[in-house]
Each structure stands twice: as structure tokens, then as C-alpha cells.
Amino acid sequence: MSISEKPICNVADYRVEDRSEKKDYQTTKPISLISVQTLPTIGPYGATVFNIGKNLLLAIANWSDGKNNRQYSRIYKWKEGKFEEIQGVITYGACGVEAFTIGDSSFLAVANYSDGKNFSIDSDIYRWNGFVFEQFQKIPTNGAVCWRSFQIHHDHFLAVANSCNNFGNRVDSVIYKWNGDRFIEMQQIPTIGALDWEFFTIDNHRYLVVANHADGEQDSINSKIYRWNGTRFVDNQEILTHGAHDWVYFEIKDKKFLAVANFKQGDSCNIDSAIYCWNGGRFELFQSIPTHGIHNWEFFRHNQDYDSPTKSLKKITIRPIIRRNNTKNSINSINNE
Image 1 (cartoon, rainbow, N blue to C red):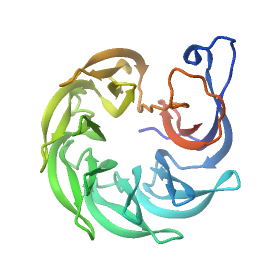
Image 2 (cartoon, one colour):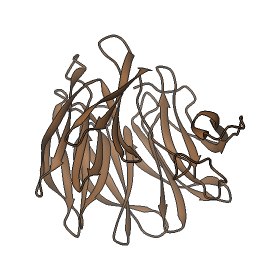
Image 3 (cartoon, one colour):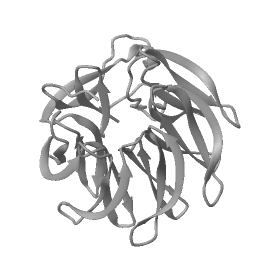
């Protein structure tokens, strides 16, 4: 993990520029990102934008300044056209933040990676009290990088991607279930340097896919897709990945895709990342895309209809994208309709 000398969070504006008289927007309507706000950060490693009622909030996971992993991760509220800080919560090498709701309650889960000495530390879940987030529950984690919340029927779950402990990166990641009062452990899943979970549904079947990053020095390993069998998640498919950092599931019309961000293979960060397409029973390679040390994919669209140009941008929302390289660590956001 690298830290920018002057880390910032850029909030960018999303525009569709018409540079042609042709009708096909997919080839003639490029997207512009225009920076509208800069926020001070400390080695940011994760961000999420979410709504609580009519309020739009932004949470940023501040990882470390390179010397101390004990930092304040910040929470901002959108007010009069910009984000204003409303709260800081103490975190330890924070790598991810996940916002979710259960009934009328809003929560924020923070993945604490390390306090600088140990990877086996608590990560925190906070609950919104109407004004700020209050600490709600501590959960023991091991090099936690990501939380993923999801719902199956009326049941609510949280999955943590545990990447390592003080002895290596073959550690179980854990799925927790809401019991009405708090989260309790439901299932442990063996993972290898896990960095991300992605939940998705296909034909009423629920799936979780994990990004297994590396087994010691070996980064060409299998990441796994798991299927919900009604009581727990079971193995469904293995896909060879290379230092995988992130999965994203998306749909275009009737096609269903999974994209993996491959970070490196051996000593080289020049490695293809891949997009897989669902064939009715499993995912098959659809497209390889040359990438260099990629950390993250984000799928977005500016119109519900992929075949029609955007007529106006009446409703703006903000979605975070994290972009990094070996010397700079920053977070950019995009606005899309």
C-alpha cells in the first residue's frame, strides 16, 4: 500500500459532452469528470456515498500517514452544493467503509486492517442516532479490508474480507447474520489474502465472490464464487486471478457480467484484468483488458436506456471510484444520472 505525499479526495462533476451529430451516444458522448471539491485525507483507501433519509453522506476510510495507523476517518454531509465534515471516528489502518440499513436503522461498518503491530484487531460497526454515528458493535477481524452487506429474503448479512493475521494470509473470512439485536457469526470461509466480497443475484440464486489476492509470494491463485443453498454458502466456481483486488457484478440488458481487477503477476503489474459473462450455469471469459496494477472496477451508466442518448441530467448522485498507482493514492468521485 502506498500513500500520497498530499492525499486528497476529489469530488468530480459528471457531464455528457456531445461532440458529434451522430445518434449513437456510446461512441460519440464521452464522459467528462470535472473537479468541484477537494477534501484533505490521510492515505485514503476506501470511500462510500450513501443516503440517510434526505441526507447525502460521504464516508472516507483514512488508512495511515505512513507512521501511525491510528487516524480519524471522516464523515461528510452534502450541504449547499458541497460536502461538509460532520464527524471523525478513530480507526486503525482503515481500508473500507460500508453503509447499510436494517429497517429504520442506518449503519456504517469500518474495516480496520492493522494498528501497526497486529492484524488481529477489532473492526467497528456504527449506528446513526439522527445526528452522528455512535459505536454499536465491535467485531474481531484479521487484516480486514472490506465489509459487504447484503440481504436474502428478510435476513440481513455482513461479510468481512480478512486478508491476513500475524502468521500469514491463509485466514478465514467470516459472514455474520443479524439476529434482531446485533450481528452474530454464521459461517467461516477459508480465503487467501481476501481483499473484496461481491454479492449478486442471478435467476433467484444468490452468490458471493471473493477476491483472493495472494498466497505468500504466489499471486496467481483461484478466487472463488459461492452459492447460497438456503442455509449457507457452498463452493460454486473457481476462477484463476492474479493478485486480485476487486470484483464487480453488473448487467447490460439480459447479459450478466463479473469483472475482476488483477493487480499483478509475479514482478510485473502489466497484467490483463478480465470480464466474465454468465452462460446460464457458470461464468466464462468474455474479454481481457490490459491494465497496470489496477485496484478497482466501477460500473456506472448515465441513462437507463443504453441505446438512447441522455436528454438531461435532472437528478445527480455521487458514486466513489478509487484510483491508485505506485506513487499516488487518491479518491475520485463521479456524478451520474
